[in-house]
Each structure stands twice: as C-alpha cells, then as structure tokens.
Image 1 (cartoon, rainbow, N blue to C red):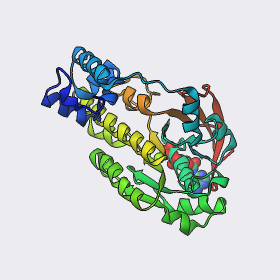
Image 2: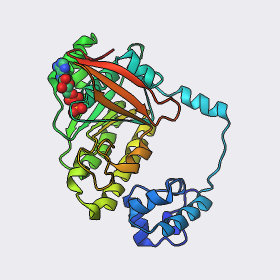
Image 3: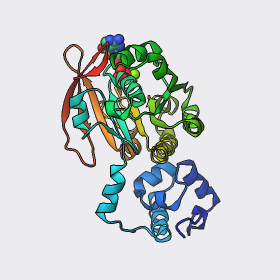
Image 4: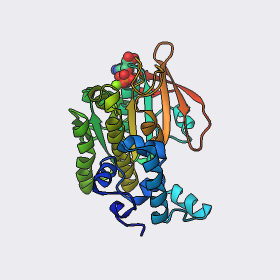
Length: 313
Ligand code: ADP
Ligand code: MG
C-alpha cells in the first residue's frame, strides 16, 4: 500500500490529485509527513481537507517504521563534506557542507552569496583530500552573475588547473521560474555521463518573487516553490550531492512576511532547507555567517572574508 496511488486516498479526486502532484507531492510519504497548513497553502485547498488527506496518507503509507540508531549512523558515514575554504565557516557547519542536504545562504545584496557559490563550485571539483567532492557541478544562474574569470582566480588560488575546473562546472541561465525548475530535470542528464556532486541555484527565489506578485498568487507560488525544493532534495539524495541555494531577504514588505529581514519563500523554503545561513556585511571584506535552524548544530556565527582568492578565514 505504501506505493499506492494518491488517487486511491479517500476524498482525493482527480482534480485534487493533480494539485498535489503539481505541488510536488507525488507519493503518499511526502503527504503523510506534511503539516496541514503547508499542504493547504501549497495545493490551494482548505486546511480541514488537508488534515483529512494527511490522515489518510498516514494510514496508507504505513508511516512509523523504525531503524536502530547504529544503522542510521552507518548511513550518515557515507555522507560527503564540502569545504568552504574557511575553517571558521566549515566549523560552523560541523565540517563543511553535508551531501544529501540543502544549504541555504540568505542575505542582502552584496553580502557574499554569489562569491560563496563560486568558491563551492571550485572546491567541489577538488579531490577529497583537499576538502572537495571530486565531482562535477551544475549551476543554475537566475541573475546572470556567473563569471568564468572569477572561477579562474579562485581555482588558481587553490592550486587547481582553471581550465579543468571550468570544464567541470555546467552553467545554465534560467530565464524564468518554470525554466529554472526544468533545469533540475535537465541536470539529471549530465549525471548519466559524470557524477554531479554539487548543484547551485543562485538565486532560488528571485524569479518566483518577481513573477508572483500580490496575495492572490501566493498559494500558486508556494506550491511551485515546494515542488522545486522537493525535486532539489531528491536530486541530492539520488546523487549524494550537496545542494547550495541562495535567497534574498525582503527589503520591502512581502505579501507573506512584513518583516524586512526575513528570507523570501516563507515556510516552504524554511521547511525544505536542512541548513540556513544568514550572511551579512561587516568591516571591509569581512562577512558574518550566522547558522539558523540546523538539525544538529547550535545557532552560532563565523567570520570569513571575501578576497581575490575567494572565501577565506
Ligand atoms: P550577493 O550576496 O549579492 O550575491 P556577491 O557574492 O556578489 O553578493 O558579493 C559581492 C561582493 O564580493 C563585492 O561587493 C566585493 O566585496 C566582493 N568581491 C567580488 N569579486 C571580488 C574580487 N575579485 N576580489 C575581492 N572581492 C570581490
Ligand atoms: Mg548574487
């Protein structure tokens, strides 16, 4: 029954099933573990209906299988770690960025989000002894800020062959939110030829924010964002890769949050990101990263710098 169709849930007709699938809920487990509020927002259905659907999915999906801690520990030993090239930054995250998870960097314009992405892209191509993932990189660029010249600088500073590094970074410019989502599927084709160990989406939310303006569009935006996040997480799990995404803070009151320092995307993005880091400017080339919302690390800060070489302590 765990593989049963979502249409087979009591109370879910073809129209609701379509809405669920559109929002990324393609199997019973994803529905069973969702909160009623998120499901209701993502699918534009009432909260009471959402509660009924979730209850039915819980029964059908046989949620509640247990695993012993040592089995989970063994699985987690297979996770890879990607260095940021800053010791303090790595320590903030335990030991760099963890594979099979989504790491979100949010902050104002100029806070260093794109520079961190460039450094991660170079590092992911490096051998494991150097803190890399010995893999290829997929970069979804929504703001046209990819600069190969900058990759060359950063690669040289890490004693890597810039030509080789550039060959392993596959960049696509996303023209709108649906193109952005399509590119995640396209990336799976690259994986057939070579392992992709890092996927970057810079920026995750800019297109969504620009395209869906006003309260009436909120449910649709959140639904699509939710689908996007689920697809990214699934990519991370299938390929044992790191997903790094950037996000803006809303400078003017968002339809969702009035608070100007809140990241865009509301609870959908918050929920799906495994690690969230708030980046802000400090004196000169210094930047501060604050870890918010981690499953296993205390809320803490690290200071790093952005220089010609890239990210450093
Ligand atoms: P955002 O958070 O908007 O993506 P960026 O990551 O693009 O911001 O950060 C831009 C900042 O990075 C610049 O203001 C500058 O301080 C720094 N920076 C960019 N390129 C270089 C470079 N070649 N050398 C030193 N610092 C740089
Ligand atoms: Mg940027």
